[in-house]
Length: 204
Image 1 (cartoon, one colour):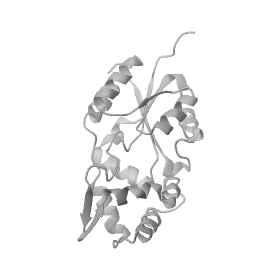
Image 2 (tube, rainbow, N blue to C red):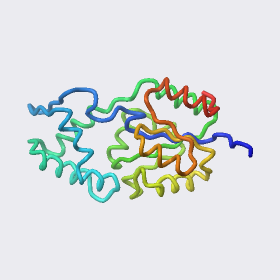
Image 3 (tube, one colour):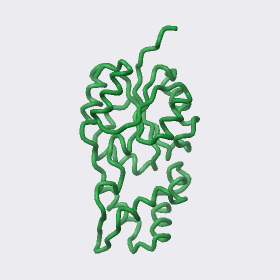
Image 4 (cartoon, one colour):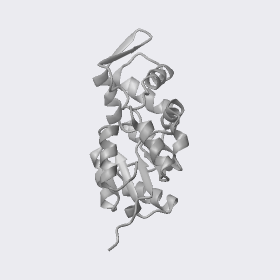
């Protein structure tokens, strides 16, 4: 059987395009309140996070629930300002996106994120211009690793799984894509990504 050529490259956002929030320092401070990275990263395990990711509650409701549970003396607006100040592009990824686009590949991004956070990351990085399609869980009511999220993306871009490569920093999300027949890469850094793409005969 002839192997299909790769025409679509599908990217995660946090952990691939930008550093995961609160992962680059041991502690953070705002308005005289200092919070450790360990405490801040528990936000991803909070029950409200899943609801926010799927667009079931607002950004304010999500952040307020977290701050109340952790007894952090900040308003939701202050915490959101702290969060947004930490958004930093991962080195080398912009250059990968530029070369893939220049070489004729279609790019899409499949993101587990509330719509406000996803949009702000695009504002900071300027990466929106690279993507033909953007799929945000907070707008679509679906989230990785639910295979329905990948299936909806494939249907929208009119691509078969064998025509795609998916890149994510979470093993469970990579495994879910593989089950659908999508060739997948666990992201480590930009250099390793280039090497992995080359193994799939993606010209970069």
